[in-house]
Amino acid sequence: MRIIREFTKGFTTELTPFRLVLGLCPTLAVTTQADNGLGMGLATTFVLVCSNVLVSLLRHIIPQKVRIACFIVMIATFVVAVELLMQAFFYPLYQRLGIFVPLIVVNCIILGRAEAFASKNPVMYSAVDGLGIGLGFTLSLTVLGGIRELLGTGALFGHPLLGASFEPFGFMIKAPGAFVTLGILLFLMNLLTSLGRKRAH
Amino acid sequence: MEYLVLVISAVLVQNILLAQYLGNCPFLGVSKQMETALGMSGAVIFVITLASVITWMIYWWVLIPLHLEYLQTIAFILVIASLVQFIEIFMKKTMEPLYRALGIFLPLITTNCAVLGVALLCIKNDYSFGEMLVFSISSSVGYALALILFAGLRERFAISRIPEPLQGTAIGLVTAGLMSLAFLGFTGMT
Image (cartoon, rainbow over all chains, first blue to last red; front, side, top):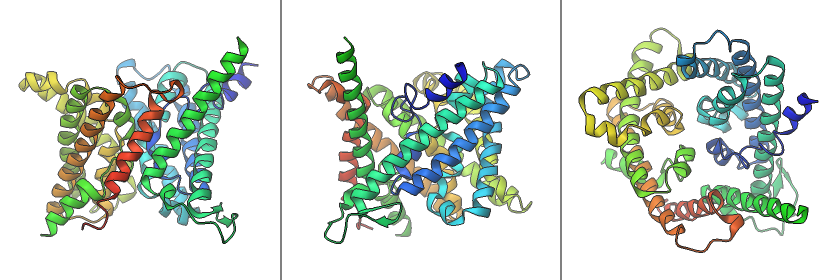
């Protein structure tokens, strides 16, 4: 039972980057297209699951005082692995994501999960926690990328959807569009939550 | 002239915060008050410049001769983390007032992706030592500029009536978007 809860919280109460405002830089930067968001999300999920498992396995061995440095080294190792894997198998995606692939190291979600969850919980739960949070992050990025791609270019995952008469809204795929879209999505989520709470009363 | 173009481009046109989306977590986190924004800006300028110089030297003088370029991510983050720690200890011993002003912001900087981001951009763009120095200083000045302007705007939020669901980060992001739109107006200047 608890396993299921640890998994689903990544989509509900701890949905990054909406519920916990963490990991904003990749969220804003790579979501010009839905498939960039998907790729970035999956790369982050891979690093998150691996680092959660390793941190959890070593949680009794790592001395308390140097734990943050140890976490960063472990995360960086997995990020290098992802970088090399992406260069080998997904080179076009790797080029589009640019410096944001190495920057997964400093994504606060990963260090945050290592510190707040994996260093205190058994391996199984930590793996599931990483998977849930990571897939929630992937979903958010894909949705954000989808909205921006659809309005900015009239296509979704590279397939034209809105027809030739649609005038692309160039603002959406530029930097300001990223901030405004995320802000509006956050607003809508807050609004839905408060409406839901009112109904419950 | 070449350096002047680089400065204008890094500060205004390609502002690391508003055009390249680096360092957004502290941008939204510490910009609620002008005082903390000023402290963070000082710390960021200092650390980005120093970190870029050191990582540039490590890349060209250590990693390239040893053919270990693929280790740059791990090497850079270790350098930045230990550099931040070192600066903290050094400042505590020698520059007490500066330490008290910047102290609490220093540990936060390790996970500020602008530091690692600028270091990686210097390598990616194949900058020479001089270009790297100019680029890292002006990028961090651009960061400070955006952060201080944004803190000024955000202080006003306290006295304006914002609909409840928009409060906090949501309105912050929309405001950042409008600021980013203003900075987009500099495109084409270089």
